[in-house]
Amino acid sequence: MRCEEKLFRPSSPRIFRNPLLAPMLTLSVAVLLGVIFFLFYRYSIYAMLVILALVAAMGAFILFDSEVYRLFGSLVFYGALVTPLFVAYMRLDPYVSVAMLWIFAMVSFIVVISIFFLPAEFQLNSTTAELFHLARRYLKRRRFRFIFSLLSLVIFTAGVTSLALFLPFYSLLVPFAIVVCEFAVIMLSNVHERKRDILTLTSVGVNPDNLQGLFLMEAALVGFLGGGIGYALGLSILIVVSLPISGIELSTGWVVVALLASLAASLTASVYPSIKASLIATPSLIRRWRRIVPPYKGWPPEWTIELPVKVLQSQIDSFMRYFHDYAVWLERLPRGYIEDARNVNLYKVDLPGGGEEWVLQFDYIFGEGAPPKIVTRNEIRAVRGSRSKEYDVRLTVKVLSHDNINVYQALERIISTFRQMVLDWTEKATFKTARKPVPAPRTLLL
Image (tube, rainbow, N blue to C red; front, side, top):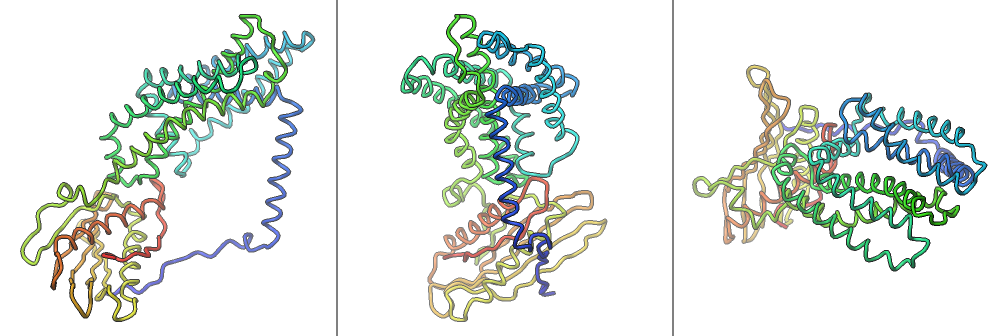
């Protein structure tokens, strides 16, 4: 049966139709940012305690699985991070109350640890949260390499904290370049060792952008931890060697500088490795054609391939309608246009035992009216077994007729376009949530 239903497009909530909402939200964000900046400026020590508590909680969250170990581990890390800060404050201002500092430190730690452990209780269905948990698992699996890369950033950030006020700025460029090169080598080795993992993630629907984000997320986590620990180590160096400590080194701004320096080094070193990881999932389709497509059948040829995607049960309607809308778009092109589609048909069949099969069929015509010309019958078939929640998707392209055209090259380009459309569809999806329909403004052979 011909599928003529329009896609369901929910209307915007009533609150978003209020014309005053945008300026009210802008004003609220501006006021909130103003309050935050004022608190950071007026109560610098308390803001620094919150940042260091976040660093401690992040480190414990990465290293430990049990919540009890995370709690005690983050407490130990936090004590090691804030102790140099308190000693430096006592040297700068002898009348400061260490007891009050510890009280505020414990308050900030309790607030941060309570908020930070919320994702463990509430499962967040966002791409960022899933990338964070996946990056944490990979860092934990390679603890030695993780600690080695973290150590290089800690030493660099400690040098920035302890020597930046005594040395000219350009003198830090050399250690920055050394850290970037060292971190890049570690990330490239991670990409090389994880080729199988990358291909596995791709087979379950993870798109190249998310693969690139995964490696950048790992670099960001290491950079954030390196910045916080390096700042505490830099203060410790100043205290041990009895160098003068200025007020700027005990301000929130200097902590932010240390964190940004560490993050800049880690993210800069990870840009190329992350791009290389994403290219593993999206190699040149034409160059690798012989590896991904089995031999054709008969003459005129017919080729069948597995599309590189696993579609969940909640996503199948969006997936099939995405390709159906594309075929209808081709069908509605003006007559006489170089490309056309006909006999578009989308239907669903219930299989015995509770399985399900979706089928989309349409004829594709290129070069109507004059050669070069080719007519193909395209079929996308998504099948789910009775005990499975995922659909295996198979594409079949059969040549019906041709005239003065390279048949094999035309088939390669047609199937390559379908494969690229699958990757475009997955870019609009998270790993587990339903995917939304995506417009497909491209033709098969043009």
